[in-house]
Amino acid sequence: MEESLPSLHARAAAVKTFARELGFALVGIVRPGASAYGEEFRSWLAAGKQGEMAFLTRQVEERLDVRKKFPWAKSVLCVGLSYWQESVVSGQWSVAGGQTAEEEPRVEGKIARYAWGRDYHKVVEGKLKRLERRIREAFSGEPMEMRAYVDTGPLLERELAARAGLGWVGKNTLLIHPRQGSWFVLGELVLSLELEADEPLGDHCGTCTRCIEACPTRAITPYSVDARTCISYLTLEHRAEIPAAVHGPMREAEYLIGCDICQEVCPFNGEGRPVVTGEPDFTLRAPAPAVPLAEVLAWQEQEWDILTRGRAGRRAKFEMWKRNARVLGG
Image (cartoon, rainbow, N blue to C red; front, side, top):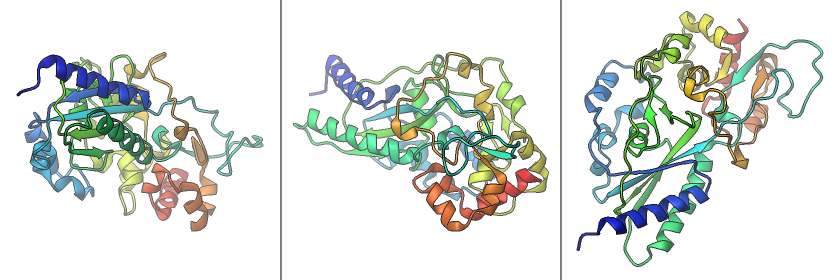
């Protein structure tokens, strides 16, 4: 017999409660289905805007419809974990950790906020595993399939999150919540359990173009980013030397690893908007929020290994940190 709506509602409410108890600030449910942006995604790939991220060209059909990979999927639970925290004054921290006397100004490279603490993949994955156990315990009387993802599998996670009511995909292609902003990392739990779905919030960007205008490399066009000129991509994914044409904009941005400029200028991240993270694993630790370029250039590989172990910034390899520092240092 097909489940009644009240039962689906009760199940969804229980699952959402479990997720919130684990610290997820944004929680929503979507029924799996074909992407509304399949044509746009294929065109983006055909134009080569994914750069060297070849993994995006694999399992395209599965990305566009999760049911192609998991025929048993009936619901996708989407979650968002805040990583925003206050910054310390630039120049006050060394890679060894702790405050240092400001004897003279130091040229530094900034680290994107999501990389200030422990690798978010590990943090969110651990929470999703605990969530999976809670769900299995709560619905132990029926067989169940589940699969967790944290920015790693063939899912269009931002579209799914938007359809689940966590926000909307903004012009900078990041998920934005109208009251809580965009400083969130996302995770998904694909379930064979049928749950009541949430309603999308709709697009609130309107005529605003602040993210587009603020991007130093002009990588952003409305609802699309060309990875090949995106500073975040160039500092973390691009393996070769960085094209000379973007050296000047990179120095203007001052980011050594990643880039937060399009989020910093977004009005939905304005005063009082960001949800301060309560996640202990995201606590700021060196090398963040900025690191002197001279220190990076002087690192031995063993130092880099120790400092980046278990961190999202490790996506950029040892020589890439040095390459980025050379660009910023001119």
